[in-house]
Image (cartoon, rainbow, N blue to C red; front, side, top):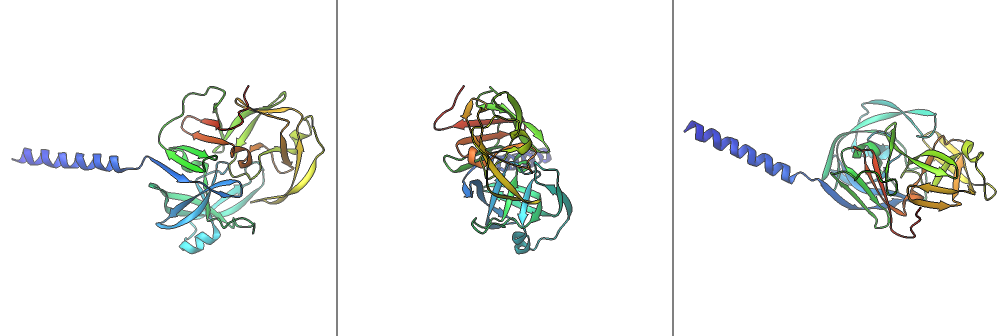
Length: 292
């Protein structure tokens, strides 16, 4: 009798475990909003919301929380951490907070560490409550489907790189860099969905490239390290990203940038999927293909 009871208990436990596993969400597909040209989605934090969070593949760590969200949720700082504009050497110290839960659709992340400051410095943009950094999605495939305005998160992996649509990326300080070329120049470029422009170059690199136009100042950029001047110029050569070619691209540059950045204004032409476990990224262009 005891043996039958034991078997019954074990069976019940196994059934419960299987049901729990079956109910655990493995994929979500949510609408993509835009913060300027940058992708954003609605999330729940500590069971409250929804709140608008920017998705920034150029941001290190897990997340950022706007100062207004910290105040609204009554969060207390758990420490401090140095932060920088990712392509610059300058740093500032920000307070660090812990979000007990952060939910995107049915997928929930627990004990998410978030740095905080005021992220709403531009009056012409909608209010944003925080930022989802690249590291938050380390266990998932993250798809930013710009043409269809969707964000998909699911388990799985990308096929092996083919050098055309699927590329290897190198992780530097937790953010992705891929190989690009401009004429004879071979370089690494960071995929930065949090950058508002199309493609940024360091001024030191632009000075070595053949140009197809005069340079002109187009405004000022802003980051955690402050404001900086932004200029633009047309390059004479073709920019190559995998199979995609961009003849004589108009690029922006500043004295602040130390890396080449592929920003959201260029990414919005693509469906981009990141596989962090295998260090792969896929670009699918749905219109006006530029191929080798």
